[in-house]
Length: 99
Image (cartoon, rainbow, N blue to C red; front, side, top):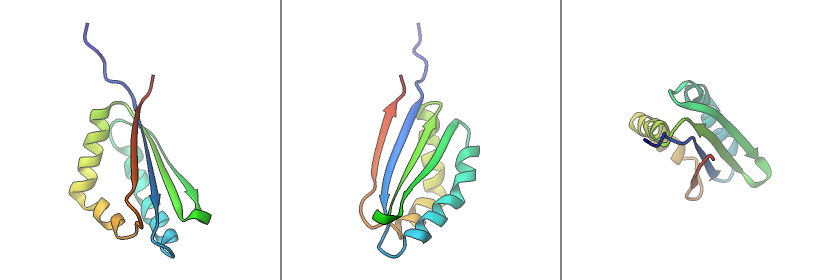
């Protein structure tokens, strides 16, 4: 019996450079329609905490392979590099298998 791929949840916590929170949110929101449309994306949400200049990106993917393909695609386009210019600390990236 072959094991099927499990759905994967991604939680990324990002702190903006002080005074650049609104710019980081706008840039990330602009990417969301492509994220939703990417093959294998089930859900993608942006959670905001302006008082801490922090946001959380929450995504659910059909499989870790789909999520990995998405990250590769974003990296190849240079999206992460552009967003990185607005980020204060190292982002906290966590993955979870959905049971």
